[in-house]
Image 1 (cartoon, rainbow, N blue to C red):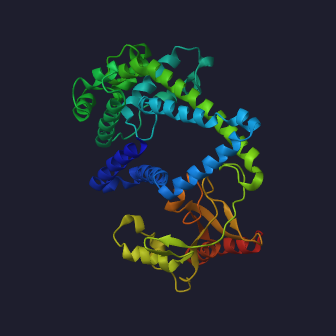
Image 2 (cartoon, one colour):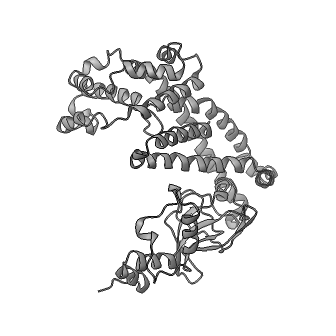
Image 3 (cartoon, rainbow, N blue to C red):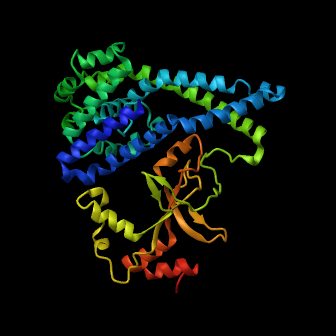
Length: 418
C-alpha cells in the first residue's frame, strides 16, 4: 500500500513540475521527500523478497526460537512472543489504510481541502472554550494573528485538485462503499469528476468566506460545505480507528522490547543491540562491493563528480552550483571525495563522524547505499555500505572552492585560529 501511495505522489509532483518548471523552488523539496521515501520503502521491500537475505533471517529466527523453546524458563518467559507479534501485524493491516486516509490534517501528500475544513472545525470548537483552556494558537492574545494566517498563501489549484482526486481514490480503496460520508462526497462519480465538482462548490479556499466563518464560528459547525460536513461526520470514526491502531502499536512495542530482552538472554553481548537511535559506535572497514556487473570502488574522487556532471549534462539532478563549474587551477581533482565502509548505518547516523583506529576523524557519514536498505531487518556486509564524505574532500573544497582558509586551519589544528 505504501509503495503504491508514494508512487502516485511522485507521479503527481513530477508531472506538475514538468509542466511548470518555474515552480521548482516551491515543490522540488516535496518531490524529493516522496522520492526518497519511495526509494527507502522499495529497498526494504526488495530485501524482504530477496531469497538469500530471507533464508539467513529465517535460519537465525529458527535457531533463536529453538534455543528459547529448549529452555523451560526462557520458553515460559518468551515462547509466545512471535505468535503475538504476528497477530499484531494482522490487526495493524486491518486498520492502517483506513487510519491513514482519515488522517485529514496530515500535511504531506494530502490536499488542503480537508485540512482547511478540519482547521475550521477545530477553530469553532476552541472558540467555545474559555481562554485559559484553549490551545495556544487560539488564545485571545494571538487570535487575530491566527485568523490572519488561517489560509495558506498562494494556494495552487492545479496541484491541489490533483491531490484531491488522488486522495478520494485512496479513500475509495480503503472503504469501498461502506462509509456513507464518502459515498455522499463522491455522489456516484469517479474520484476525478468528484474532485472537479467539489473544487467548484467548496468555500474552503475562498478567503472572504473563510474570514466570514472565522468571525461567526457557530456557523462553521452548521455549514453545508462538503468538506466540513465530511470531517464532522467522520471525526468519531477517525478517532476510534486511530485509538485502536495506537493501542495495537503500544502492545506491539512492549513485545518488541521483550524480544530484545530475549536476544540478550540468549546471545549476550555477542550481538549488537537493535538500531534504536541510541548512542553507539559501529565498526567496519573501507571496502568496495559488486555493483551493476562491475566493482564499486571504495573511494571516489572529484574527478568522478565532474564525470557525472558532464556525462549527464542537461539533467538537473546532476547539475553543479556555478562556483563549482570552473574550479581554480589549484583545486586537486584527485582528492578523495566519498568512501564506503562496512559500518552499519541503519537506524540513523547521518552527520556522525567516522574515525580510524587512531581515533582521527576521517569522514562524515551521510547515507547508506541502496543495498543497505534491507539492513532495516538484517545486516549483511556483502553489499551493505555506509557512504561518507572524506575529510580530505571537505578541506579541499573549503580551501579552494569556498576560500574558507580560516575554517580549514581551525579543523586541522583543532583550535580556533587567532
